[in-house]
Amino acid sequence: MPIHDQSYRHWEGELKSHYLRWWVITYEGLKVILRRKLFIILILTPAIIQFFVFGGLIYGFNTFGAMANLNQMTPDFFFRFCFQQTFFILLICVFGGSGLIANDMKSNALQLYFSKPLTRSDYIIGKIAIIMIMLECITAVPCLLLFIEYAVLSQDLTFLRENYWLIGSIIAYSLVLNLPITFLTLALSSVTKNYRYSAIILVAIILGSAVVSGLLKVIFRSSWTNFVMYWYNIGIIGRGLFGMKDEFSEWQWSLVIMLVLSIICFWIMYRKIKGVEIVK
Amino acid sequence: MIPIIEMKNLCKWYNQVMAVNDVTLNLYTGITGLLGPNGAGKTTLIRLIVGLLKPDRGEIKVFGEHIWNNYTLNHRIGYCPDHDAFYEGMTGFQFIVNLAMLNGFTRSEAEDRALDVLRTVNMLDNKDKRIGAYSKGMKQRIKLAQTLLHDPDLILLDEPLSSMDPLGRHDTIELIRQLEQEGKSVIVSSHILHEVEAMTDNIILINNGRILAEGDVHEIRELIDRHPHNVYVNCDKPRLLASILVGYDDVVSTNISKEDSALIVETTKPDEFYSRLPAIILENDIKVENLYSPDDNLQAVFKYLIG
Image 1: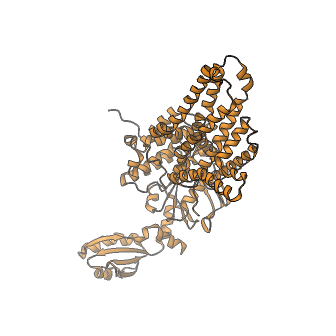
Image 2: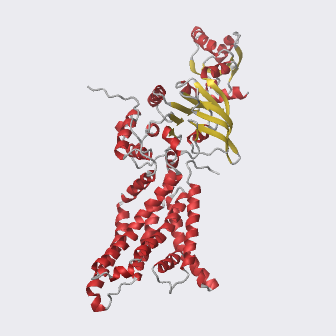
Image 3: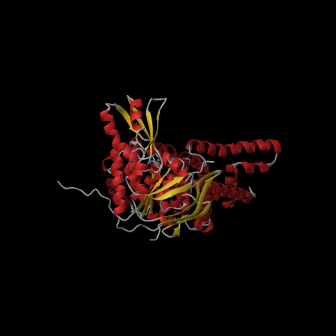
């Protein structure tokens, strides 16, 4: 009978360099989320179905558009696709993002993570990437595919020549749609050990901002109160980026508001994420 | 000899509480026992060494480099926390593999290495069970396994024997000794003197964030032995036993406890006392239910040292 060596064994190999260490956090996080069947069936699948609906519309425009006078595809179409995904963006953040840091804090995992050669920045980048990858997969990626579909189905290069800038708009708008809410989700996740609380607060902030905006509008009777509404800001930035500035000219203000919100959230996150929680 | 850890006027406080108070200390290779009662500052000191906490004052160097914000040093440090830090839904194997990847292993390397360290801590048979289903001792072994993953030079174990059964304690003590023989430096914290004594002679006593004493455990023992020891004897004839014992020079006093009628003997020479006691018991047909010395616990040691 062979007797195996039970004693301590040294590691003789080389360890990888540091620059991709955040990817371990991202990869494992995505694996955990995508293992949840309900999440895929109820949230990701409907979000992707939207892509097929819009893809069908593009096909319809190209095939029957001439008859129905619909063959002029406008930038508004791509904006609408992205903006319609906001519902699923919120769902992904609530059900996929709320626990990302809260669960680590609850299980005391941060002290183990930071006792490894992993920096706070690696950790934060890894967590941001988890949400961003999922969100980009339902916004930028399908929207760019729709753009390509339209370009391919067009009979000449006129569409591409006149609308090539839309590629930049789609990418930029997907970042505007996804980054602030990612920061907000993670900031809320870092202030509580209970992911349910962070999910509830996230929904309250996003939906509550519309309620507060409505109340302020009644009190002050000013259109500036719209800036309190989260999705309003996101909407008019989109219109600005897709060249519909004539309708909403204050999109730069909304951009500043989203930038400030993102910075505050990032600051909260950076302060709260520590190897050891110090109870005051 | 070059110290592996240098602490100079190290301070750490949490609001009004001074967790580590002006600690100046050098630690060298081998096993060092960090001994102190609960709340003494052991865990804070270990977290400062790992770089999880930033010193409020003073400095700390590990392997000659400042540890704070120096994540590359973590390649050489293994840390086993006192509290559980698990995702209970994961299996032990998954948990170890994930942490191995954070150390820079590729997935296949991480899996190989995980099997190695799980074998070392005798958890190979239970590697595929959910961590939530593990006993406390098993969880402790898993924490120990993740500490050894990257073959660190310096290993910090915060209360590694807590919640372990006697066999687990024995295995872990043997492993720690083996790690020392393999050239590792190990710092083990505990609040139980005999646990640390079983691993090393080199101990540091800490209380209220201050270092009270450092050196050979036998010196500490001698220091303790200079002070009278209390020995509790639960027996059926406490008064008879007391009358016999007061005749010896080393016995300072005898008292009978009001609570449980135990005889409390105060002696300046505990070793002589213990060697003589069996004969007295046999000669006088005294039935002893229980015999213990509260001086063996650490709190008593600190009382002596603080005076």
